[in-house]
Length: 169
Image (cartoon, rainbow, N blue to C red; front, side):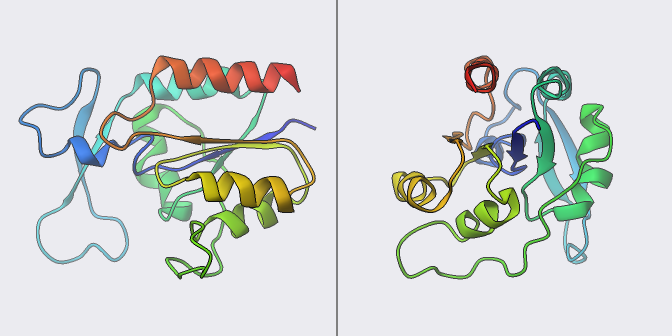
């Protein structure tokens, strides 16, 4: 069974911290979106690099791709088509944005539960050393937690690291 590749949208695929720049980072296109809950005011600007879809699809022979984003199933409607991705399974968070009390990211425990002991790589902009330590102590399988800079998004080195980690398994 292939390891999971758990994919966050905002940060890795949508470098939202770059939105304040006059122009989008090279390769990115600005899209205006209205996912559920975004009903008032201007549409949500989202930066996406269509090349990331091909890079993720190249990893699909080594990983099972899964959305691990607060966009949940809506990533298949709003994000995936701009990247050329087929519909992907998603983590259906039982609760979101709750404090953990130990400084770990609120997604961390849910990611480990979703993985169910399977090896996984997780790309997210809010991962810290505390999350890596918590996963190492509570997940029996291999895990790679890769923090992505939300001002830059995924870069070639991230895809190389993900491919190398899967190959080493």
